[in-house]
Image (cartoon, rainbow, N blue to C red; front, side, top):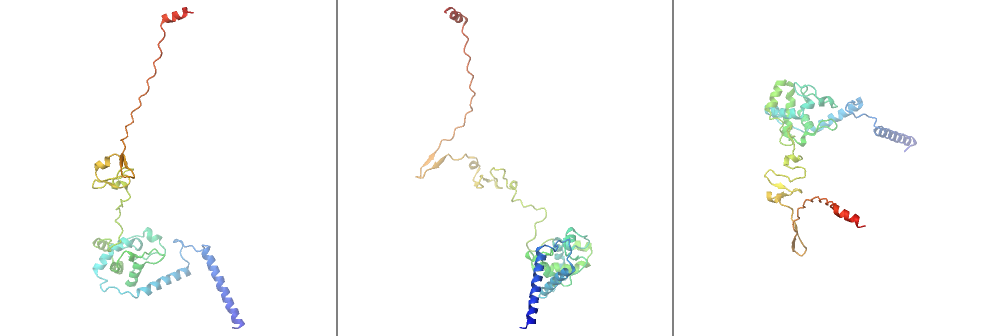
Length: 277
């Protein structure tokens, strides 16, 4: 290796080290604003957008949409799930912007006005989601066939008016995709509510079949057992049992009567006492 080559290699190494140190300092100092209300710089956005598009395209090319993707039944079933799971961000015919659609960055596409260019890419995105974008991976709770139904709906959505879309949602069966659906709004889980199980503050619990529980939560067999006093006996190590007498009720203490005052001496006795001196 010549002297010139060594100098060039050394200069490259120094530059790389300085660049890495500068990048580390930039990250560690928190200079870059990651808030969703502060848009990326153009270079950063361009890099992220390219990474996202190429990543989806590379994976979606292996997918083959079902031949009946455009069937009315697929579109109808997909409408119910789209309304429940997607319209809050991606909107629907006749909908205005929502708090979610205004607050997310990058802004989610309005699918009531634009159609995904490829159903396979739409399928992949719905199933796997996109990191750090607000797009969840619905494949954790939804089977592939239901996801294809949503992809079918997306292809037809921009051509619908509000009335047609609402009619499809009403005919779709609503939010249903074979498991993982959230509980209907207003349904409360009453397992944590003592009143729902008949428990009060420290008392015996009551089951729906009338069986009671003791303070430790063990079921009592009947009302007599529930009302019976605590046992007064015990068993010794030699096997012999010993019963204690039931404790007597404490009697009310009667207040002591005040002692009677001593009688005054009779007048005659007083006179006799005076004359005896």
